[in-house]
Length: 115
Image: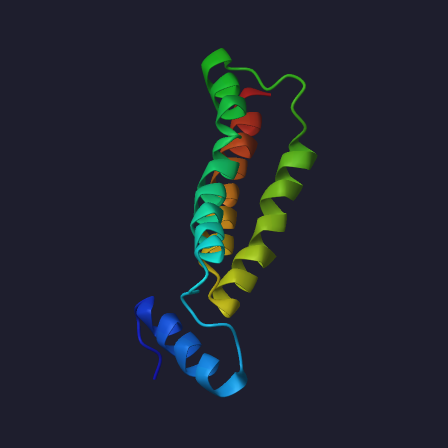
C-alpha cells in the first residue's frame, strides 16, 4: 500500500540507495543539496515569469498580438510533464509544470475573453 504523504518517496529512495548503489538521499554533498533547493525555487519562479503577460491581458483588457495557438500548446505540453513528475515522484517537475499549466491556462482564458 502506498503511503499518502511525501515521506514515502524519501523512504523508498533511502531503501533503494542501500540496495542499488545509488547516491545517498538526501545528498551528503552540500552542492547537490543546494542544487536540489535551487531547483524548487526555479520551479516556482519560472512560471511566475508569465504573470506580466497575464496582467497585461486582464488589466488592458486586450489580447492583441497574443497567440492562442502558442499558449494552448504551452498549456498542453505541461500535462505529460505533470504525469512524468507524478510517476517519478519528482517534486520540482510537478511544482513547475502544475504552475505552468495554471498560468498558461490563465493566458488562454484571457485570450478567449478579450480577443
